Length: 303
Image (cartoon, rainbow, N blue to C red; front, side, top):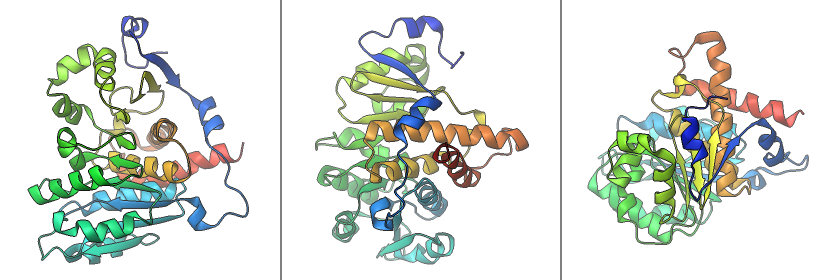
């Protein structure tokens, strides 16, 4: 099948093991929820996201987590924006941090956020956080300190090259523009030799990388998993925020980081494929995705 890469590129993958993720892997990875489960056992996700003008990113990430099975979510918010978060996040909890009316989280919130980190099974950092210097300092300090699985997305990626701590627990989810900044390499150069470029990056990065390309790719060590679902409708604001919540959700459900990324990418793309059947690529928006993701998961749970 044509998945977006030239055949020659797939024939010469160097030292990386390249596989296509398909439906049968979903059946193997997606464990059924026990009938006697308790919400705390279904996974606790902490979401550190949003700022003035970008509160929607936090909402979308939260619903990505909840609709993919997390039992409980807590979304950290600047106190001046808490009314917005509480209006749109109905099933999840919010955790307000004082921001002196600035509309963004900062390094001054570090100690309070760490109180909630102890509670969480997995953490999302980045969607809509903004790029204020104090916010970037906060993200760096959290990642260098926290010894739990972290999904680092969007604005959170701005600090990647300044990180000093172990990165084994880290998942990064860059699109090509963000990956270009991480590598300090032009996008066209990345695209021209994508698989070997990813291989070179993974020689030094010890976490998991989900690179939002065509197709989406999940890399870990010498493994590269290519996604077989998705369409241009996903190129819309907020779709990546939903994806970051999904990844953290599956990790909180005791899935390893690599499988959580592969599964999330597939289900996210499959949901988009289902949605465009009735509305086309252009009409798809990110808030359409979480409920359709739940429907796709339901299809596998009922097999």
